[in-house]
Length: 176
Image (tube, rainbow, N blue to C red; front, side, top):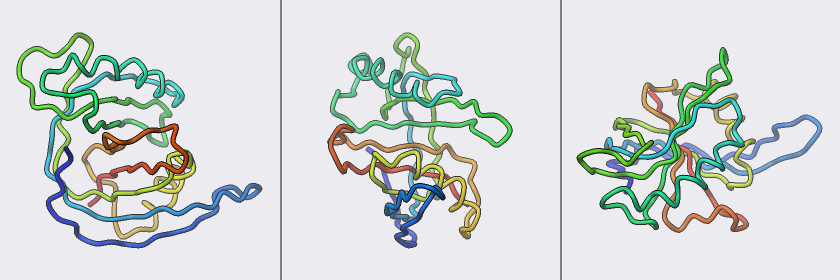
């Protein structure tokens, strides 16, 4: 379970248009929080094709039961890194929080998410591509914050069902 130690500031809600030819307006809520560090365990891909993320989740979800102390209906996370302007390749980890000790299930890795300050963006799941374009292409450039050294991650509470219409998701972006 994600531990937020303090909410620092609620910044604003925005509506934005991303494409010149297509009106794709939606609302993103932004909140700055301080979180405690935590450890996740999961399955990783290295790719330049974001459509592979769904396949990774389809393969990982049935394997959650292999991680001691974790239930199938626990919160989940999607951690990513390496997507820069220089290289379109990224690494993505479909994972759950765990404090297990001992050998990891075959093919899984452990990653420590550092505590610190994060901008938390809440938006409709179906607008994920537009939201990411805005967050990384505009918000980080004009906000009072710089991209931090921590991992950015998606947070999926246990009740998250991506096929539900209007379901909201959260993206935590490390900031300084």
